[in-house]
Length: 159
Image 1 (cartoon, rainbow, N blue to C red):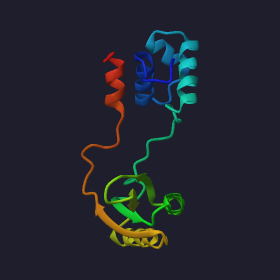
Image 2 (cartoon, rainbow, N blue to C red):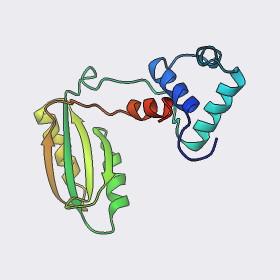
Image 3 (cartoon, rainbow, N blue to C red):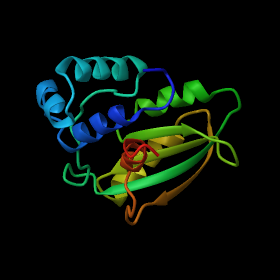
């Protein structure tokens, strides 16, 4: 398997594990109609390439008490991205940080338990010395949640 795009078997294996993450290698092999060693070798290679990062549980943040999601564009002091990212990573409610082009330098997804709690989180974010300006929006709903399934299905079809 080269380091390029996934092939059909890789995609079918990943789709199978997406739907049933607790399946064992032998059951995956049975369902895919390939040898157990083939499945194990594919999993090992996918993990080595970083495609398969692990099998974490799929958690529902709302059920955990974090019913509010917000996004913030941050403008930061130039040349301080790594310091700001490190400070943001220390804030438990910060779920993701992306370096971006355009007006903002960083795009941040954060969660909170309430509006008051969100204010506390935003106050923590803006207390980072290198943060110059923020613009925050609250998510009202998530009509398309984070996904990768369509990409795997396309490859599994041989497209």
